[in-house]
Length: 322
Image 1 (cartoon, rainbow, N blue to C red):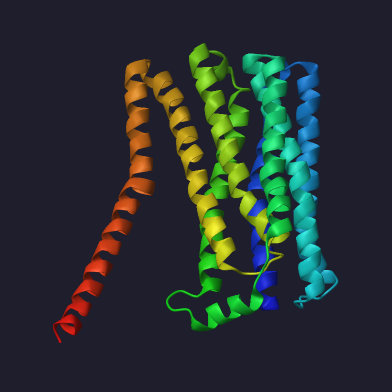
Image 2 (spheres, rainbow, N blue to C red):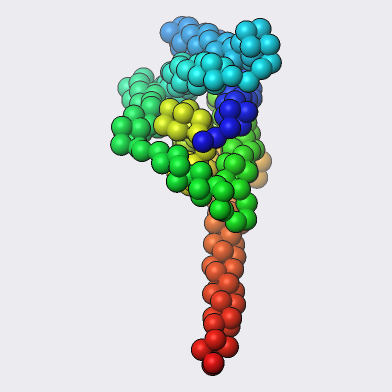
């Protein structure tokens, strides 16, 4: 069983994971109201952005709530009650966040591609968020059986990095990626309200839209980890959760790279006024991302496996000689 101190720490760390990005998006939402392009939005879109801001503020209130509870109710003491309270609040906080994200995407897509496509993308975004944050968890939780004693024996006998440390590392690595991705998404939302965006070629606007959707997908994937840990694992540490979080983190890097490179194409094309150069520069950047994050790392992993296998083979040779 995971120690209560570690469970509470993980819960608070996951709350911090969400609050950093939420605060960035809220700040950029405030700024968007004062951009020149905001006045050009349809009246219903302006009210929707106001509603999205209110929803994000509700999310902010929920995510910060466990901290106040910890200080006022338990007076800084770790308790099972605090852990359960934080878990419940975290579960509810993701609902308004997903709705706000869907509304923002509707406003952006409607401005570029029309109201029908805007509604479709907005709904799909919210459905995707609910599926990854609650649907997968509901399916897995129904059949997921934790073997606490086996986990305990595994922890007692494990070699190398302890499971607790591995989970802490993967959560830290998720915290490294998520705030930056959410900040980038916020800037993408604000960009469509600028005068310079209006002057871009239509193709660049659609590339920007595609990039925005990629970053949104990245954020949904990254926020799946704390949701899964709260709902399925109930804050417990397990090798199953470590593998799940690792896969989600790696999966999120693919849309992140595509989104960054898409907007890099838009910027390079605007500065150089050369579509060919912008495409080439973006492809080089994409190859750099995928090459470093997946190509070189997979090569090193396979190389290390070969070295270990060769070492084990050499160790067995003398025994066979006797």
